[in-house]
Amino acid sequence: MLNDTIAAISTALGEAAISVVRVSGPQALQIAARVARLPVKVMPRMAHLAPIVDADGGDLDHGLLLYFKGPASYTGEDVIEFHGHGGVLVTQRVLDRWLACGARAADPGEFTQRAFLNGKMDLTQAEAVMDLIHAQSTLALRAANEQLGGAIGREATAMQQEIIPVLAHIEAYIDFPEEDISPETGADLLRRIDAVLGRAQKLIATSEQGRILRHGARTVISGAPNVGKSSLLNVLLGFERAIVSPTAGTTRDTIEEIIQVHGIPLRLVDTAGLREAGDDIERVGIQRTERELERADLVIEVVDGSRASSGSRLALSPEVARRRILILNKSDLGIHADWNGEPGAIPLSCLTGDGMEPLRDAIRDVIATAGPLAADHPIAINARHKAAFERSAERLLAARAALEHNEAPEFIALEIREALQALGDVIGQVDVERILDVIFSTFCIGK
Image (cartoon, rainbow, N blue to C red; front, side):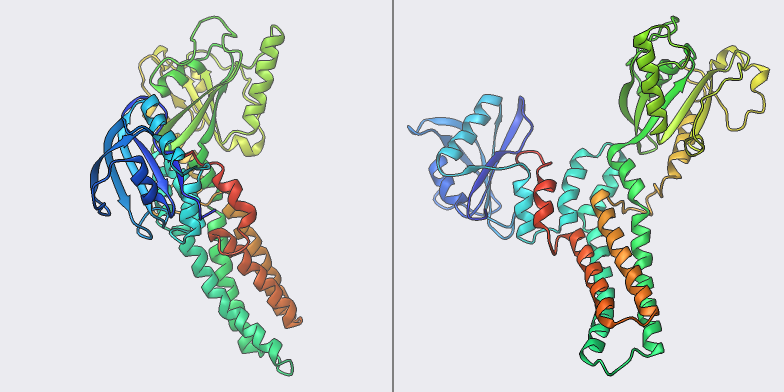
């Protein structure tokens, strides 16, 4: 694959001031000489005015051509970037010219995949590229930048370096079977294994935080009809997304939007009011509401605080109930005495906006229970990392048990090797072929 020279449009489709066509591979500069009128000498890392010409020598576009000589480039190969006018047609024509002159259309994520294969970044950094592009909050952006800087890769590498001496000691006893592992040596090896286990478990604990940062905390707004659920959604969004009507049952289906509160991404879900369904359509909407409540990271229960309590509240599992915030809406009309002393209830008026800051603070506090969503905990692993760290921890626990029970050193060494392999999977050192295509196929073309 690395013998090909690839090309793609790296900017988003649509009209813009500038578009970028990126080319990478061993023939990048030679193809550029056929595509554009270049100066006598193309200097690396300098912008050159270079018209792109068609097969007959006519101009297709005028723009700036930049040459990054490998290995000092994003991919580690020779890279050419042409910055031209950002029209849809002209950009496509420029790309077609590169392809006609010898380049191949890049696959999704192939530029970053080449950067990984050429040692410019480890696998966690490659994944962080898309996390950075998709970041929807300040905390997600910070976590993506930390990962792009190699934070997770450094942790996995450090854990490998800690466990390799343990494997070396065990293999030494395999080479000299007449020697038993002394109690002092065994205790030292156990301490080393425990230290790595602690680091792995600390990282595994950030997986829920990573899920929330990447995908948003699923926040379900629920309650009886006509208590102001859709009004609350509109106030949180800052625009009228949902239809607000005094007619009960207006919201029939779930409505989703994404916002951020205190840097935390929230996937807001407005749901149908819970009551006895009046027709089949409303019944389906209520069933969807019940499903959303069970998989919510946070439930905002809205009641009409100006009216007497009916005694009926959301029926939630104990786990979900711990992630519920009660909103006493319509506080501008006064709060009914029935709600006095309701623990944790937040008076709020969607009409005046009073109570929005306490609600935002409560959201932050509830979501923070899912993980350390703070600046001093920048690492947040994804599902792939979690699976690899869990495999490593399982194998280390098995090695620890075998060591404590004085089992054969061959068995202990096997468990430790598998733990090292799992750590290698995190950064892409071993057995990466089976996961490369899955990871890089999620990338956009041109990246």
